[in-house]
Length: 186
Image (cartoon, rainbow, N blue to C red):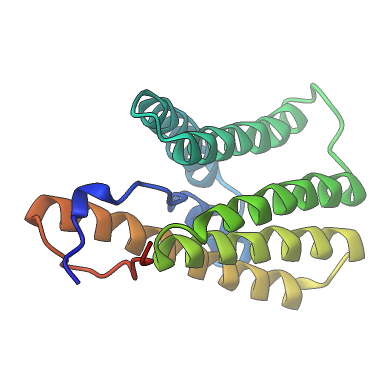
């Protein structure tokens, strides 16, 4: 099958969640590196990418990038506002609702990936699972074992996003499939 690489639309999430999931898996405390990744790479860079996708009339990617960029900005803002004493920390039930709503949004976005490549399906599918696992963990007050397991699932999601992004980059750069995306026949 000779698919044109230029027809592949960038619909991947980004690897910025790796920082937070390394924290969830127990590798790091919540620190400035994780917050900076959330603000700059998770937030600002995705919003810019979303605007660029909007200019290319790629509604799916624009919606995904801008939405998840704003997710990261809002998440880091919640953490910083609490640390500065400008607001009370969200309790676990509120965080569970916040994360569950993002899980629902991501599940709908996953449906959109069914018309795209398999790599995007893996990213959005694992991200949907991650949001719901995080919500369940907060809602139930799950212990560190569940949170560490959730962190590992998030690391998988982040690495799948890195793979999908690199595959698109290298395939376009070389004008042929270097890393397969598992294209869907239309």
